[in-house]
Image (cartoon, rainbow, N blue to C red; front, side, top):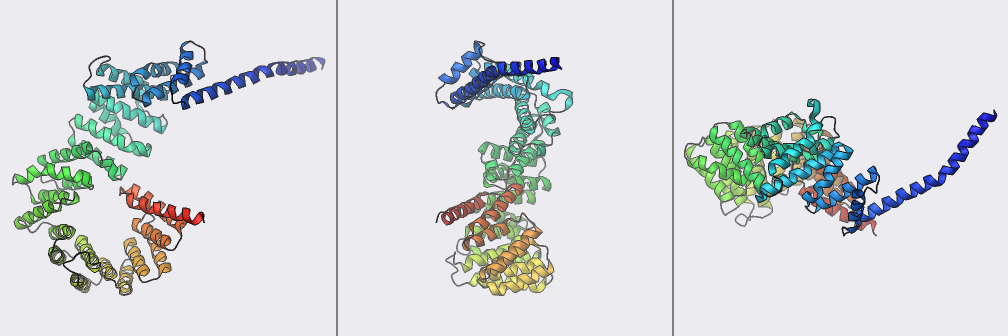
Length: 529
């Protein structure tokens, strides 16, 4: 018993003796943390350089030294001094043996190589050496053929991107394309999917696989979902050039033509695509479908005069091209010169006579009706075109009384023509024929709002969202009603849904962001009163 008590007393005495030492150690750690954070925050280099010198002199513990070297390297890299940061990155990778340090070292080496290639610099470390060292740094991450699957997602994405570019620049794009092609990029962070698709496209192109490269460029645009994915002229031009090569080799491939147009859904990519296809069309041997692809690309690019000329030339040679009249009518309506809208209505009606299912022609008629009703075109201030469009839609409904789209287009024409109450009967009939079409229910909400019943309008938008929770126009229209009614908080909820849907579907997000800005301002004004 006496022995046990002595042991306990001894431990207590020892703990009391070491307590001041622990306290001093904790204080020292806190002091170092504060010094490091102050050095990182400082605008000048001197405080952080002093800590870096302490590392060189062996004055810091291994953990503290690693933190200092990481901060020092990050500062140098942030201002483009990758070569000066290389020693710190190399030391970290050697001392800590962590994947994050290996990846950071490889990224540093790749950036140096890319700058040398871009500037044509041959002094100092060669590009080949830099790229070889980058690949050596990453090599342990690919052990056992896992493609880095055991890495955290962000680190894996960084490693894959760096290796792909390093191998492509070093002359081994086949290996880069093979590894990236095996990886399920949907499991990686969203912000990395476009860069990785872009890296895959360039690797495939360098490996002599233009079709695979074009598919990867298209994936990059679909993943990003906004015009920014095509904002770099280099990418848009490269995409167009790839599709031009493919279509030159297979001009009859209509599936490939459709792929090209999907890639050109933004004007930034459509214009170079149209230019890439021009020599094929001008040679006089291109099939009608390829001519139509170029004409469509010109229209998407906003080059209406050229698009109209291209559609007219094709119509004179081959009037049987599917959708030709509706496409020409759309370009004429967009140009809006005197007489264009009359001709556009004639063409849309002719298109519907041949193809009653033409959504483009039906939509165009009520769009022209809306323009005429709002007196946007001075050559038709009397509503004559509105009356023509309405007669055409009524004739379509008479011929296709069981077609919900025909009834919906009639409702749209009546609504945009200022006859909201009359349009409701047409929308009701369309909903009866197709109760699961969210577009029809959303349009019916607009008619109810125009008729002065905002409660019923919001109910209709809600019905559309029950069918399709990501329905963009229903979210946007509901948000507008909430804003007009002084409910900015509810508007923001709908706009958040619209933004998420737009990103997921690859649509532009600017309209929803602008409306969200209005809602935030309204909410701020409401809460500040």
